[in-house]
Image (tube, rainbow, N blue to C red; front, side, top):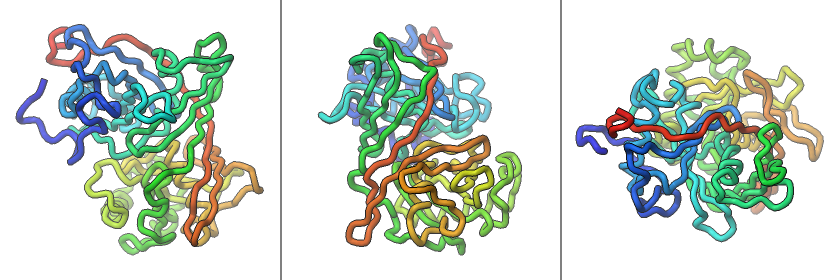
Length: 376
């Protein structure tokens, strides 16, 4: 399966598994025979789309697994023409689901971001959008039983060690994809909500708030970068001056937040005052393409910045009444986030965050690996 001349596939870090079948790293038996294809379900989760696999159906060693996934998605190629990727970071994603490795979870979920034009597979971040499909996928594959008319699946997010619960309608044990999926996140364990230890930093001369509430995110004021924050994603991506500035800010943030050389982090969200009745308007870069909406955990991190006194969101955000969700506006709509934050010894502590997403099963079957025989 390997090619000795292929580059490092993960930008310096392989997948989240150990290579021995634990932690959703893959099955110890090396997955299904290549010429039989690999069992796969293609799902839309929130505003992303990805390939969902059982851990047991993928190779156990992370380097072999990553090589398979690059070939399955059609990378590296900006068109991903020879794979099932969609030529965009939002559609070049993989969810690996398996039995739990902790007692308070029903399943493990490992998220892998697959490069599009570049040959990398990284587990350095979560994906809250694909998370929306994990509960239904677990029920479909028999990993999580349904009691009554609703499914409730406790999900261990292997990438960061967090725990989320997905609740959704499942009459007679069958997933109802027409209804919403409630995602509730337990209080984060370990890790710093403010990775730099400060509510406000100066990155390449721009004031920023660096937050990690499930997704390392840099929050900036759009006006500080010379834009309104209401431009379309296409307009922002075509602005070469802005792209260069974002690259410099991101480089400074990687160092300040201790992220090393992570190829897909941090996310950068540019804030502007709300103009559609919400709490704040956003334009988010992942990290250089402008998101047509906003990621689930990115929205949670932005919402966190919005409620922190002294953050760059102060003066821009319109906070809702107590108990009401924050409405995070984005280019194609808005995102509702419920947030509970307390202060302990002068530090912010997240007690709970929750939101609604949707997911849909698009297809299931076998995906074939180029060069493996049947997929050649």
